[in-house]
Amino acid sequence: MRNEPLYRLLAVLLLLVSIAPIGVAAWWLGFVHGESPCVLCWQQRTAMTLVALCCAFILRFGPRPRYVGLALLISAHGIYMGVRHSALHWARDVGQGFAGEFIGAHTYTWSAFIFWTFVVAIGLLLMAMRDGATGAEPRDPGPLGRLAIGVFLAAVAGNVVQAFASTGPPPYMGQSDPVRFSFDPKTWVWSLEEWEPAAISLRGRYAFASPSIDGLDADPARGPLRGLARVAAGSRTRIAAGLDGTPADFARDPASGRFAVVTSRHQVAVLDTGLARIEHSARLDPGYSVDLGRGLVGVAWVDAATLVALNESKSFATLGEAPRADPAKNWRHFLAGGERFEERSRGRFATVRARMNHVAALAFDPARPSLLTVSVPNARHRRLVVSRFERSDMTLAEEFVPALGPGLALVSEGRSLDEYYVTGLVVEHGRLHALSVAFSTLLEIDLVTHEVVAARGLDGLSRPVGLALRDDAWLVLQENGAVVAYPR
Amino acid sequence: MEFLNFVLIFATGVLVLRRPDKEALAFRLLLFCAALTVFLFFVGSRTSVLPPFNY
Image (cartoon, rainbow over all chains, first blue to last red; front, side, top):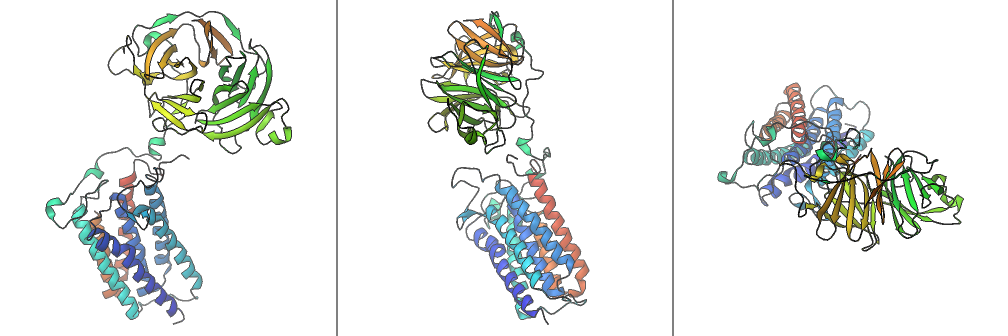
C-alpha cells in the first residue's frame, strides 16, 4: 500500500507512452498520414513498446528486479539504436533527413531522446520506491492500471495491423525505403531484401587503415597511362641536416626562393634557397585543439611570410613568420622552437567527394588565392579528387575528378587515374603539377578544363614525398632527404 | 518479422491483463520479443554496427 501513489504514477506514464509515441505512430502517423517506418525505425518502435510492456508487468506483478532490469536494458539498447540510426542523417545539410518530421525533428532522432527519458524515469521511480515493494502474488492494477494496459493493447493492435501491411508475415521484414502506408493490399510491399547476404562490419565505410606508400609500384611503365614521356633525373642534393623526423613535404616560395619543409614529427622548418641551412623552425603540438596527429603531409606558402601545414586528415595550421614572436604566447602551440613563428589559426578542410580519403600534399594557387589537395586511394575508397579551398575562409570552393585530356589514354579498360598516389603538389600558371609516388608519374592538370593535359614518367625516384618548382626544373623531395632536380 | 513481434507483444499484454497466473510464460515471451528486436536491428544495421562516424 505504501507504494500505491507510485503505481498510479506508473499507470499514468504507461497511458501516456501508449498514446504517444506507440499509438500515435501507428494510428495517427501511419493510418492518417501514411507514414511507414523503415526497418530500423520498426525496431526502435518495438523497443519502446517493450519498455511499456515492462511497465504493465510491474503494474501487475510489482517491481520485480527482472522487469526493472529488462526495461533498463531495452532502454539502453534503444539509446544505441537511436544514435546508430540518426547517425546516418545527423551530418546532412540543415533540414535534410529521412521521411517526415514530427515537432521539428525526424522520428529516429526522437527515439534516442525518448529512451533517455525512459532511463531517467526508471531511475526516479526506483529512488522513490519504498523497500519491500515486491510481493509474490500478482496485484490488482486497479481501474487506472487496467485502463492503461487496455490503451496499451489498443496501441499495439494498431501496430499489428500496420506491421502486417507494411512488412508482411514472417519471414518478410521491414525495408530500408518503405513505401507509404495504405489499407489497399495492392500497394503493399513485402520484402526479403534485408535477409540478403551482406558483410558484417563494425565501422562500415570508415573501416580502413590510413594509407601508406609502402609497396607502391614505382615503375612509370606499369602505370595506368599509355606511352608516357620519360624525364631523366638531373642533379641531386640533400636537404639540410638537423630536421626532426622524416621529411614529408616541401614548398618553395617563388618570390624569395626559400623553402618550407614539414616532417613526420610535426616540425615546420624554413630553409634557405639552397636547402642547406635551417633558418628557423617550430614543432607543432599535434594534440592542442584541432587534432593534427597522424603526421604532417603537406605545406604551402600562401605569401612571403605565411605557411599552411596540413596533416593527412586535412586538418591544418596557419603559421606566420614573426621576427619577435612571444615564447610565452607560443607555448600552447609548439612543442619546440617557435621563436620566429606565430600560429595564426587551426582548422579542418571539409570535402564532399574526398571525405572518405586522406591527402598527402598541399599546394597554393596565387592566381585565385586558394589551397588545393588531391585525395589518395585507400583499401576501401579509390578516387582521385582535386579539392580547392578559398584562402579567405578556408572552405571548399571547388571539387572535381580530372578527366583525360587530348593525347592521353589509359593502358586498358579497368585502369584509371585513381591508381595514382599524389604526394607532391604545386600550382603554376593555372596548372596543377601533381607527383604520384605510385608509378613515379608527374601529372599536369589544367585547373580550368579539369583535364590531365600532360603526364611524364620520372626516372630514378624512390619514395618521393614533395614537389617544388624552379624555372628550370621540377624539384622532388624524397623521404630519405634527397632532392632530385628534373629538367623542364 | 515485425508483424510476428507485435503479435507476440499483444499476446503477452493480454496474458498480463487476463491471465496473471501465466506470469512465467508472459515473461519468457517478453524476453523472446526483446531478443528478436535486438536481432532484427542487427540484421538491418550489420554493415556498420557502430554509428558511421569518425572516431
